[in-house]
Image 1 (tube, rainbow, N blue to C red):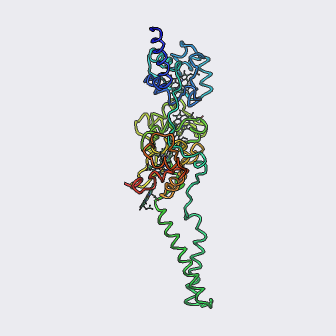
Image 2: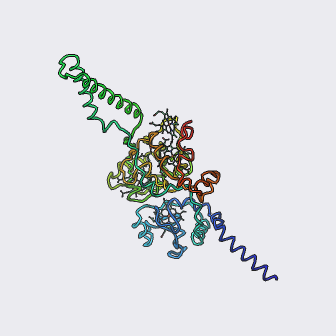
Length: 376
Ligand code: HEC
Ligand code: HEC
Ligand code: HEC
Ligand code: HEC
Ligand code: HEC
Ligand code: HEC
């Protein structure tokens, strides 16, 4: 009987571990927070190498001083340290940790178990987010020539009506007159609406900062610098201290030599922040939150709203950020509310999906086109 109870306890413990593997995550040591912006365990290369199995590849005697002061080891000529630095070319910043703290992190890496995937969030279907096209309003750019033509026609008709009287049929003159007037007022309406919008805006910045060099060539994750995009309204622009994690050592660039990077070092020494010019600007009466969007699976890419940033030497606003742009996407994007507890309250939709009355739910159905969703 005793054995039976013991094995029952052991068995339930096992089940508990299987059902609640996230328990392991709770043991994540505080020191790891600083590492995980550059390293994964089993999810591939980030800024630095994947650390899965690193405690087998390398001895603890090597790992402890390397993690504390990697560049000191590189400079002292340690062959393994030199080799890995040559490969990554990005210096790992010093970590002010005691030996015990490092061992603590290393144990965490050795024993790390991938937590179970969290329940998927709202998922716009692949198909829709791929098919999503930029909103191409009737822009002033493409109407330049037709506008000029309309002005010419309008002037000719006015001259003909009052002076030359070349056109015999009055109705034809009137038709041309109203057509050109109508066209011009439409252009004026569109232009007026576009006032204050800035598609393609790409201002000069205080430092020649290239996303292509950092995110494209060096594969630095967007979140390394814009760390707040997932949990707040704004995606913060990184401070000089973030740049200095690497640029205390990387002091020349392939394209700009030392001129640009020295500005970062000056800012660091003088304590004067770099004054970046904000590129994307919504009017104050619009409410937009990053966390509401980037946690939606399928939109998390940033690409849907900012274009292919990792190919830009100089950042530019790709979409017009107009109300039509927001609404188009909200009307078209399907949200998968099945299997998602977050949407458990939308009972009506669940029933309609089940009974076949509807085959999908869009952001619009969830209230994403109500004026109050975006306007204060
Ligand atoms: C700013 C990014 C960055 C941070 C933060 C960072 N590392 Fe690194 N790490 C790197 C880079 C880049 C390398 C590759 C070696 C080099 O270039 O010097 C590396 C290499 C390593 C290596 C050697 C891997 C191997 O395969 O030999 C270990 C171990 C390591 N880091 C552990 C850590 C730990 C532990 C922390 C947190 C305390 C940490 N790193 C924080 C960027 C970083
Ligand atoms: C659904 C569209 C959308 C997605 C997805 C999106 N953004 Fe944005 N982003 C915007 C809009 C709109 C603004 C302008 C916000 C404002 O002016 O208040 C903006 C502004 C920014 C800014 C300037 C600072 C700010 O918050 O105003 C940064 C940096 C930024 N985005 C980075 C990112 C990154 C990194 C990602 C991916 C993790 C991302 N964005 C995903 C629409 C989006
Ligand atoms: C994780 C490491 C890392 C961080 C953080 C980082 N950089 Fe860099 N940066 C690099 C690397 C690597 C290069 C490429 C050097 C080369 O051209 O070989 C580089 C190059 C540059 C260059 C020169 C580009 C050229 O080709 O001439 C500038 C300017 C620059 N960075 C500015 C910044 C600014 C500003 C920040 C902070 C917002 C920043 N960097 C943050 C790693 C980093
Ligand atoms: C090394 C740090 C770094 C990384 C990595 C990085 N950014 Fe940036 N980002 C910056 C800095 C600095 C600025 C402000 C300077 C500028 O506008 O060029 C900026 C500006 C932006 C802006 C314009 C913000 C505005 O003013 O409206 C967007 C959008 C943006 N980043 C998106 C991204 C996306 C998407 C990625 C990933 C593909 C990414 N960034 C990766 C540092 C970084
Ligand atoms: C590329 C597609 C896309 C674009 C562009 C977009 N959104 Fe969204 N938005 C979504 C999705 C998807 C959701 C639903 C998120 C969810 O419910 O999980 C959403 C939800 C919202 C919500 C919450 C709505 C609610 O009732 O819960 C607000 C507010 C919002 N968006 C504002 C904006 C504004 C303002 C803009 C334009 C500046 C914009 N969005 C542009 C895809 C987009
Ligand atoms: C998905 C988000 C969203 C929803 C829903 C929304 N708006 Fe807007 N609205 C915007 C954005 C973004 C702008 C700024 C557009 C610009 O600068 O062109 C805007 C601008 C406006 C303006 C200023 C005029 C203009 O064109 O710039 C008015 C008025 C307005 N909205 C009214 C409404 C009304 C009424 C509703 C409800 C029927 C509504 N909006 C719903 C995002 C939204």
